[in-house]
Image (tube, rainbow, N blue to C red; front, side, top):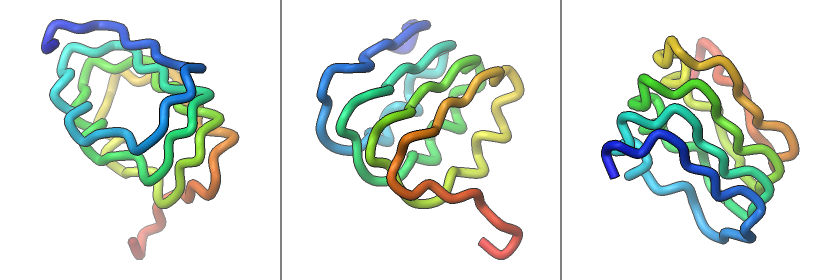
Length: 94
């Protein structure tokens, strides 16, 4: 799976959390998990996806802080996070 470029499993009624193992998909350019029933936080391991250009996790039930590690992904062009429970931007104190 380390050669996977696109993962689109949006609108599939997936239940649970985003696994930390998503960080192992190092070649991933597009990750679409939108419109599911995902809960918990966004794993910091997403910050290891240095080739990622599009991250779409809108319309889930995610909460907590948006990981600062996303800022390490220099290729990232699109982040769609709207429609989640209670996502917060990190502050300088966090």
